Length: 126
Image (cartoon, rainbow, N blue to C red; front, side, top):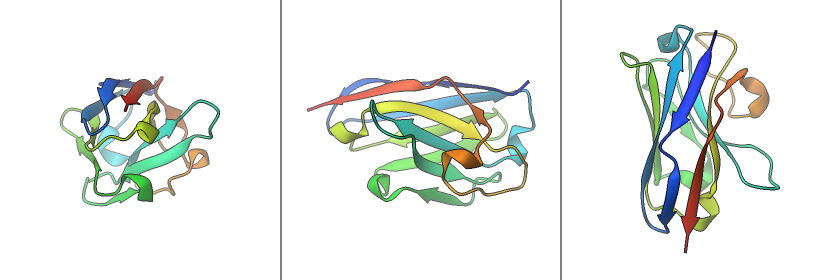
């Protein structure tokens, strides 16, 4: 079955960097768009970035543009999120997600994704 396992979260000071990873298994990772979402306590889950199956097309939510980079290695079945210039407001649980269908480029909304990892916590302190 589909399994998504995030790692790389942690605590960092504002201005610092973290690199999140998401190891995928149980399906043809290379055929699917992938996305990162985040959810802060008391807030709704927010789409952060999405990348298409081939890795050539990406979309970011406005608040992370220029600071975060989504990437993938299809040979390793792994999704990444490089986060630079972290801000306190970036603190959240970060999730990777896969849609139900291959060869689609869904909108960056929770309802567009079927498979989710367990999340990795990011804490940014001032």
